[in-house]
Image 1 (tube, rainbow, N blue to C red):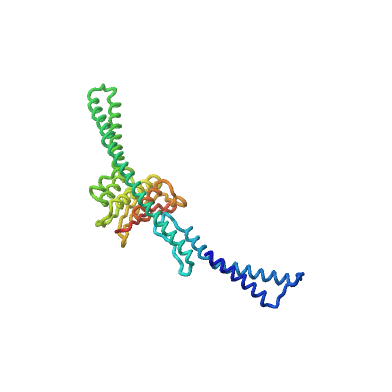
Image 2: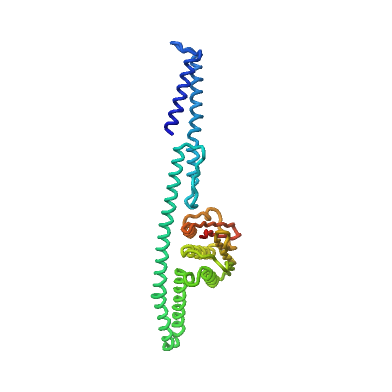
Length: 316
């Protein structure tokens, strides 16, 4: 690039010198008005020619800059293309930038995978402690209160029964939280059964019916992909109940060519505007899980027409 710029400027100066030497134009010791006009016009011509030629030289760099600005880290696999007529230097810069993108995506995927495994390990630990410690403790309280109800006076009976039922409800809530943190059906019975169990539990807790339409014969997936699909479905249902106020929710999982497509659709208030590209909260977590398995997450909504969360996971 440096050599080309020097060559262009040198060629322009040599051309100007040749024109001055070979043309009938002369410069007097005392420059006249006409000579000033000729010099000004010649200088303007040289400057304009220099700008036009250098613009063509630097045009590939401008296109490269625009392409680099358009690259979205949340959409992996996109690369800057090299035009056939670009200079060797621009081609080298483009190739280096694509190599950096490749390394960043690999590192992000690996670090994200480690983070997801650590998160799931922590979820498992917390679920076990809730189930084995807190759950058993509340179960013991319920048994003690059962025995106490047979010995307390009649004036305290209702209060003791109320405490017993509160402890029983607390135990049920703890076990439900533990099941949400660690989906046992996923590892024991597979993705389809785990999603059916998730939809059934969601309908029981919220009173919102869930219509599930899941392929009977799902293709083999890696444990990471199954977990990502399950967590996106779980988060989608949770967001629908928390923010959408729907009357019904649909959970779909189908194979489309070489892609497995998960959809969580509700008929609630609908997500609109910048909320569909929110970088924080649940949407960010779902997008991160999609990226870790090489998939894509799409969130669409319209006010009063519900929200659709769609996850596309490529099949091996």
